[in-house]
Image 1: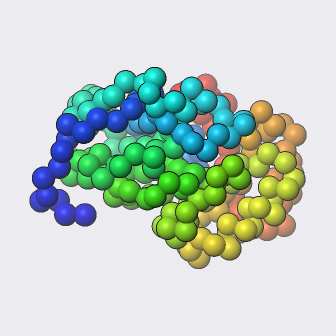
Image 2 (image 1 turned 180 degrees about the vertical axis):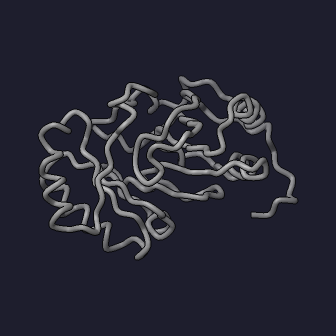
Length: 208
């Protein structure tokens, strides 16, 4: 990233919501984080818990300048861009602006759209409904597989074999089936200790 280039901070993006909370999942679980949830998704997971994010047109278009000022109202240092599918949008200007102001940039993505933006951490959560692109798989720092049924373990191994050797590997129960599937995930991790357990802690402690 070149910090001396001129960045268009008037660029607007469809934003479903933005809020300061605790990261509840994956490698950065437990850290204070400012979330920006972008509208628009063409993946269509049947169990998605934010289906209202799918249609980008129904969400307000907010400028990078506006989002930056909102973030500065908090002590946040970690910014998480999520969706929807955030990579449906060009994210260079947003991430470069955030990094120039000293923020850490993380993204949560299915990897199904071309990679854009400057990232300190990429969490790839591949979905069966639309496959991730090779460029995103190669760049992933963390892979988070949502386990909905027993066949997902074999599917998880397919992507574990494709990511870089230092990529963190997580299995996370789909929320509506967590009570039933979590014991199987625990057994699988005990038998395959390269994997770790990710839980949606924010849902247990009732924060956004």
